[in-house]
Image (cartoon, rainbow, N blue to C red; front, side, top):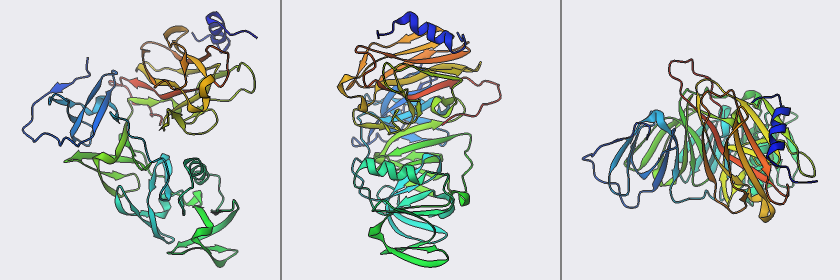
Length: 428
């Protein structure tokens, strides 16, 4: 078998159906004191691809930022232009779990020491947010003990997000699971009803508790919110957040007010109708033709093996995990202006992986990467898609065929100019 060349990629495209400024930056001096030298530095990514780096003086509920760059100049960034905030000097999230996780809908989770829970509420102490009380009807489940490693924690979290459960379920440390009715979490044990009989197990025997998804109250998602990731691996979507005097304040989707220091923020995604993440959209067509071995389907917000997308040890919560050779076609709307992503090989690929990424609009190539290998930092991609009907993302064989070509389209998204159009529903 030979390595495919560019003409064959065009034939494959035909085979799937023949589908062929600074964003209003303003500078202003303010009379407020300069941020402390210890304040974290953030990269603010705007819709046109511009990145402004500096310390955050303030953030308004609509996302408007007052940012101070290294030269002391103030930049006022309109909230409608903000796409993402990232710590400029990479701050990895907690690598070794030191406390249980509470798993909530829509990807949210909170790490903290669990004090107690009954049939109504769960109380915890978070190193980031302090003491919180969360209604049980807004929780998918919670771990009782810290996981021994990140991989085990990810597997537990995935089990707790299983919405096919028919009842509450207790997961034991020995690998067994029991369908029961959860009753309470105390200082030393977990209480539950089994065949209408009250039972108790020592906490050290229980890994996690999953709650009946039929009783879950999924919160309504507002048109605009902000997805915050924190350094302890907590993640919360906040409504109308504010940043002032080094503190983040906001309201969670489950109605609890939070207050956290700014230096515990790792990343913030602006979520609104202008920003559409492709991991939340259904592709119009998907084709996978591996070099050898099985065809692995594209995964949303996961690698092709279903693990968190990980590049150079850093986890990413949004993106598409693919394997060469694959094609994804997404329909475009008249309001779609730009496609943006960062491309890389997942750490699972190891030293043998080698991939070429291509972006096509109606069959016309708009971007082609050099061969990408493991260990390379993610490469930014920004492509004009205005006027197109279909966006095609191609993951192609690089040098060496398809050996461990496990690729990642990190934060793959469309930027829309809505104007006076009826806003579409944005993917997450």
